[in-house]
Length: 75
Image (cartoon, rainbow, N blue to C red; front, side, top):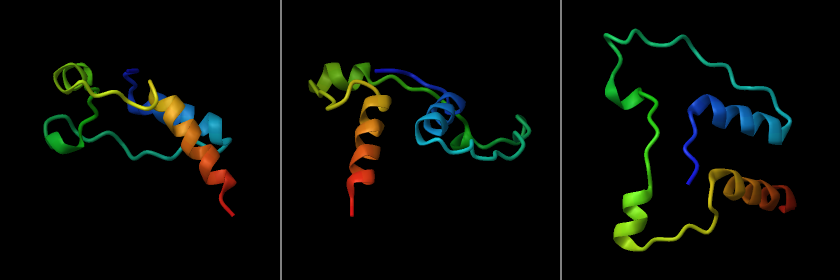
């Protein structure tokens, strides 16, 4: 339930993992950019209201934090 832009996601991930930010290539020319590579935020509101779906974690931060903890605990 927390919309995030790609840059914000990678900034958070870099901070929590104490790793450098990934390197990104130059932005594509908007006149030639394909729809599939655009960066969009979407809402899960309709999905939750229509199907009554509930996420285990309210935001990507909680879910990924838990997954990173599980990953670190692996032998």
